[in-house]
Image (cartoon, rainbow, N blue to C red; front, side, top):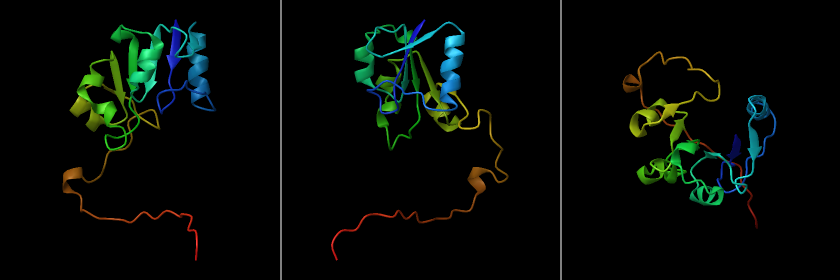
Length: 142
């Protein structure tokens, strides 16, 4: 089977660089699959975040052969959670059980590959706290 995988930004082909990605590519090849470009008429399209452009470039019309892996939250990539876009793919995988519950699809545990430890205090009973995140920036002028 010829499988195309997009980069996370969607319009480019995925570049395998180090673990665990090289292991994934080796596993696909071990099962007799070939990783190809989105532009080379693949049998299956795996999108890392939704990309209508990648769908068009692939030429695939059968949604069963299109898989969406959602990496970003709705605030960063709202197109991943759009009902019309979700209906255009055969399978959707989320790294959050909350997103699975809200939008359907299936869970994948990232980055550990298995369900992490349970919270000692249920989410609803937690004490609200806040924090500041400060980034170092470049200041020009004096």
